[in-house]
Amino acid sequence: MRRMPWAMVLWPGLARIYCQGAWQGLVWAVGFATLVNLALVASFVHPGLLPGSLSSLLWLAVAIAWLVGLGRPSACGPDGYRASRLDPDDRRFQAALDHYLRANWFEAEKTLKQLLEEEPRDLDARLMLATLYRHAGRLDEATEELEALRLFEGTRKWDFEIRREWKLVSEARARQAEQTPTPEQDPEGDEGGRPHVGAEASPEEPVRAA
Image: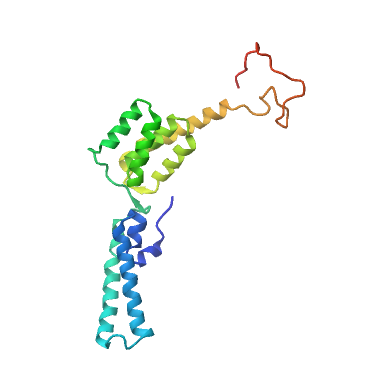
């Protein structure tokens, strides 16, 4: 499980960018960098650029901005991300749910991906997408979505559904493994996986299940 690097807490704004993808964090980080650079230039590169009192006030502003910025990471979860709340009136989610219930996998996937492009922290949409991939037999993609869910804080109310989905994906993988013939089970292949010379399948001969 990935966690937020502790060093990000030391620079105001970076934690909010990492945790929430918030543009306010970018503004805060860039503004603090500008303030620090201005203070360094005024103090060491061009000492006469500002009067001594203004230079001191500039460093005081840097210290205040840094201390205030230290309080921002409180919005982050222990794993570096906070899940967003689903808007119950979002028509696109309702449309995705309708497509899902009708087994219209393509339309449901398209709608869910549009939702996640706008809000990657939409927990409900991501869990539904993982379930959709499982139903469609795309187990690797289902696993990727479930792994992504581990990065979020706020998944406690969905713990049962997430654990159940992991179990169903594992069972589906086991069934796929049972149905996939090994080289020893393939009657038309030798040890190197190539067909035997002169061996041809009879069209009347039924296919033997693995």
